[in-house]
Length: 187
Length: 190
Ligand SMILES: [Zn+2]
Image 1 (spheres, each protein chain N blue to C red):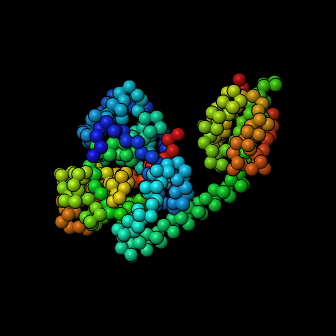
Image 2: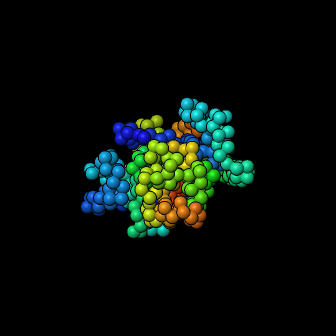
Image 3: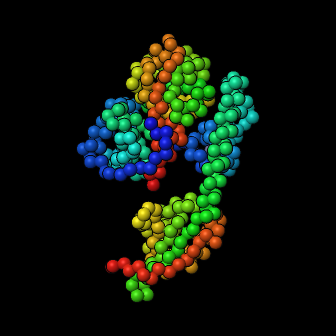
């Protein structure tokens, strides 16, 4: 039994399906989960995916239950594959919009929309922008739902380069730079 | 309870008086958490209340979920908290075959606990006493562990006392409360 000094216990969670890795086998992404574990926690991978363990797991179920479990996991895998295909399609058709907005005369801010479709964490990207360009960068809600990043300064081209170079998932064709002159923001 | 994906509702600060009340309620429900309570619910830090669908309240510290409560039902620990302090809770174990049902949100049936792979309190097979000696009554909050696994996969409320389970060996044993991969598990708290 664990002694209190070991608490809180540190539990590793799967970087793919978020469950403790010993439960990955019940999800639809086992293959990816296994690859992740091998890469990130090879000792744990050795324990969980050894031939011995796999055989032991099977031996506790009746043949019938094994078959049902097998069918069940195939269904889950198919579901996960469909979800992944959908996400990919969404990425292919989604656009990121980089807008140059004139605030005052010759003062600009740059707004970036559409990052969430590429599975990016907007808050984190905003922080990265701030660091990378040494400028103010914040997340604001867009009317009609969603969020955009507002960066101080005219950085459209730099952000375009940064995004397409940093994230290989984002095709250059899916990023548009536009100018928004009309928007007057009362200061 | 959290079978569907959810988005968190409004978030508000818990007043310090209410925060003391929650701390007391947690200790009353889970006295074994006492040595760690200052670590879990530090007196000086701000606890937040996040509203979830179906009148569930979730208490969080920063982006860490701690406890949740449906209306006036018992306050229950989030699974990540259970994983940190596993033996501070009453726990039972299901056999391997029951795992995939629990992870799909099904009500846990008694055979999953009474079969050779399952464990109930005062179990002859349980040599280290991991699952306790005292029988648990219907209505108790229990943590559900699984055969061959170290970490718990569910927190729920017993529908049937453990003594009765051993006798009848069938029927609904435990409501599906919060399980690995459910909407509460997947909640994005930023
Ligand atoms: Zn996984």
